[in-house]
Length: 460
Picture (cartoon, helix red, strand yellow):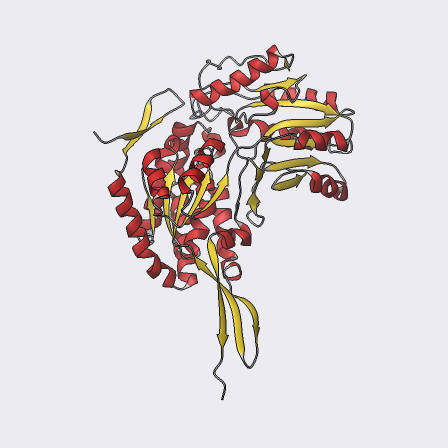
C-alpha cells in the first residue's frame, strides 16, 4: 500500500486532505526531469524568467479567496487576516526588481591583454523544504529567486499545509512555467533523505525545526551539497526607558500572539526597563484579554487554534513547568480553550532563564516578561539563548539601538518594529537558528555559484 500524507485540520481534528507519497524510484525520476529541464530554462533571457515567475505569483493571488479558508482548515489562521498574498507578492516583486543587478557579472578589469569577470551561474536543481506556519510566504522566499536565477525547483511542503505547494505549482504551470521546471513533490522523510544522500540535488533550502535541519545536514554529509537552514527561534524584545510605550506594547504583544504565536520571528520573551515594567504589563493585559479564541472560519475570531494538538501540548507543558517553578500567569483561561489545539494566550512574569519557557522555542501564544535595569543586563539576557534570528529594540535613539544591536547575537536587529521580513535585507540567523541567507542580493548569491573568467586576448 502506498504511504499517504495526511493533513489533520486543527479546527475539528478531521482529515482535511491527503496525498500519496512518491516511491524512491518515482522521486528520482521527477528530480531527473528537473535536471533535464534546467539548462533550457537557464538559457532563457532573464526577463522571460522574471515575467513567468511574476505571472505565477499573480495567478496565486487570483486564487486568494480559495486559499484563505483553505489555510484556516489546514493550520488554523483566522480568515479575518486575509491570507499571505501581500507578503508573498512583496517578496517576489522585490526579488524580480533586483534580479538584473543581483545576477550581474562582477567585472574585475579589462585591458589590452586580459578580460576578467565573475559570473553568477545557477546551482541546477534547488530543493525547497517549506514549513506550515506561513506556507506561501516562506516558500516564495526561495522559489522565486531560485527560478529567476535559472535553477529548476523541487518543492516539498509540510504535511500540515499539504495543499499549498500543490497550488503554487499548478498556478505557476498555468501561466507557462514548464511543469518540469517547478515541481511539487509529496515525499516521506526517508525518500527525502535518500534523494539528498544520493546527491540528486544541487542545493537545499530548509525551513523548520532544529532537528529537521540536523537531519538535512546528516543526509547531505559527504555529498558537498549546499544546505541553507532557518531553524528555531526565541526572539527577544527589549523596551528601553525612553521607548514609545504604547507602540512597544501594541507591537510586541501582537508579535508574540499573532498566528497563535506560530511565527518564525515571533516575540517569545520580552525585557522591559524597570521604570516602564508595570505600565507595560497593564497595557499588555488589556490587549490579550481582548482576543477572541475560536473557529478560524468565523470572521470575529482573532486567535485560532494552534496547527496541531502536539504543538499546543508543548506550550502547555512549558507554561505549567514555569508555574511550578514560581512564575505567575496573568491571563485567565479562555472559555474556548479545549485542552487540545485551541489554546488561550498567556503572559508570564516571575520567569527566569532556568525555565524552558524562556529557553526553548515555544512557538505558541505565551510570552514571558522580565524587568531589567540597564542595557548591559538586557544584552546579557537577550544573548543567553541557543537561537539568534531577530531582536526587537525599542528606543527613541537610533544610535543607542545600533550600539545595542551590534552586541546582540541575531541575524536581524529591529528598532521600533518586530515580526517583519524586509525583502531588501538578508534573512538570516546564527547559533541554532541555522546558516545561510535568503532574499536581498545575498539571496541571489546563495542560489548561484561564482564562476570566474580569465580571458587572455590574442596579440600579434
